[in-house]
Length: 330
Image (cartoon, rainbow, N blue to C red):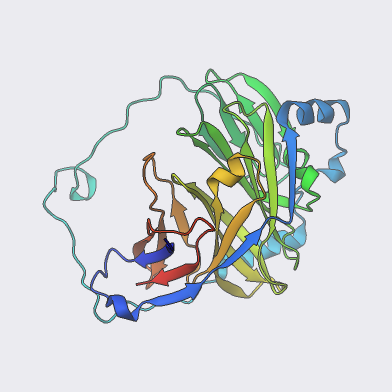
């Protein structure tokens, strides 16, 4: 029986849209252009025996990149207009005396507190990120990756370029890391080749729950020859690992809508070919959200509608085994 997977954007503030007027865009089914298997511990030990000269450290951003960061902050993507039939509803039934008038559920206090990974001042910004697994912590900066215990001691630390160099990429940056507690795997994402037509999105998944062991690495072409990928965000659900990226023109000042790359999670976890579908969106800075539900096949994303209005999106649960085919906006 033929099924379709549809990525649908349904905004929280605009549920009244007519389903027959939806904007449907076809996705492109693709496969990673490069893949590799690396061992985190072996790469870290090799780096210790063959330290990188300071001038060869990956991600040492020069003056051109600093100037771009300043221009990037001034860029405002054209917002999508609010639908004429939008209905704005606020749920005021659960008001309390907490900040903002909403019920406040406090998180438990931390059981311990320690330093994660110091910035070695080789990149700006450091783009700190991290995740917790069963027995390990993994911390990623624009310069280095570190695996730690939950008591703060370090197992292994290696340069970001050392982790990814088996894929033959230039200038790797913007790391993201997640832990999938249902499959007991680590997910690591970055982008590479900033400002070039051969821009790449990089995805790595651990072979086991131990981040010190083997990783399956994949590199995909980010887009066409006229734009490059920046600022990746990553999420997962039962079936998919979804990465979104902001797209910029090669002249560093043109802004394009975001791309979304949807990977077959089972394929990546098995060390497969790196099968994915690339989808284009009319939005700048669209972000997927992880579903901590082992049975959920719905992938939610948030995007900026009419600037300050924020919406949700999802991948419907009907799908083809070969992958997602279309992107549907409502």
